[in-house]
Image (spheres, each protein chain N blue to C red):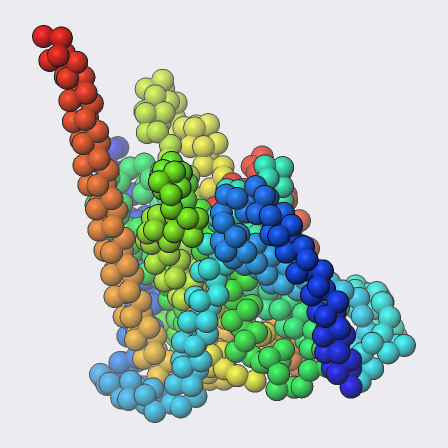
Length: 301
Length: 336
């Protein structure tokens, strides 16, 4: 019994250590945001201040980066959600023999380093621009456009995995029933498939936006003359270090925390509702079974 | 001028096709709608599905990669000579990675090759380290912890995952800097007298890299271990198996796809990391991605950069295939 307690203590110690490793650096960074010292550091503690937050709000470069990141995020969502939805639907319909090859192609961006996706996007559109003899101001050299396309390449693959997980539980008989009752294909798509996929669409959109917002490896190659939040941040961190970066980190972590918790709650509620609906349906089923089996009995009696 | 010709040809083509299309509209239409795929989805949806998937697969995945590979075999030409007589294929860019420029004092380009091998070796070690420290946590969450506790741990794991990669690296800079937290603690407790430059010694970089992608190891592991029926562990224990053999014979074989998936992701992301080396690397140390970055934006030699990028990509592909072979898993199981 004693050795069991020792074991439990060790496990507990390990878990504390692990989460300490996970959160320690973030907490230190957060603390540095409130230190009076002109360098982002925790010790020596020179007194509590909020001035770094004020300094942040006046940083025009940062504001421009954030604005661009938001625009790119929206662009990526509107490009990758429809693409990934189509790709996920396709996977169920494509010829059995082609399916593995198709799957390898569309999933490969997940396993490709981000820098390579950025480089290949940059090179490809540059070549196209040369072929089309395009002006330098044209879309082929536009940092924002290239970043949206480059990021969507792999974000679509992430979203596709989200849709595939949901589609696995889709009951095709619903679709067939609707078609039998005279619905058109488009109606079936909008009235049956899309409502069924709505939680997945929501998840995919959130995932796409957040992934886009924090992407650096692909963006740094495709963005060129423009800037996003991450490229501005990277430039600042490399140049030197000011506590306003810690202040920004505190803001981002707070937003993330709120976002993550809300997302989690929404998802859990959705799941609970679904669970309840399924139970309800099962109960109704049993009820029907009972009445069906009861009727002949009653008739014979 | 050429724009005009293209436009002219397009109009001509349209005029030629028009009578044909009008005459056979009925036939074309019924031909299209008799395809099984179109029958199943309807015309509008089929068009949407095919168009999106083709646009993605061809113009965003396949062609860019091919163009990058093609570009890596070309000379670095000024803008106006592209497509001219000098625009031929060459192996120079790959030769440079291996042997350096002609007339260099050393036979091999050790400066870049060393960085390349260091990147691969360190990435592999980081992957092993992450696997080692994540396995107990994943096992605890998947098999030991119950209900609310496991969910709370899961939520706690998600939060650092969504903090920006650059800010995560920045946090390590605060920890490991010469006047950073760790140095202050060590000096304060009297272990050392003078601050140690962890960043120059690459300690900060290795710690930061291990930290950066740790969650991509723990989630696949957790998913795999969680699906193991705990009765199997109980049965092994009842039959007298020591704890390490339970893991070796029962848990690890079941968690294979998760281990493969996590290892692949962590290796790929570490080898392809750019932000952490830029922020945490010492002044003299380099990461392979940094050399690629420099070819593109400092050296302005895109073909050379593409060649280096392709070498990195090929390495990652080899790594994925090796992992698949070792763990005997299929591609679909890795990319989940």
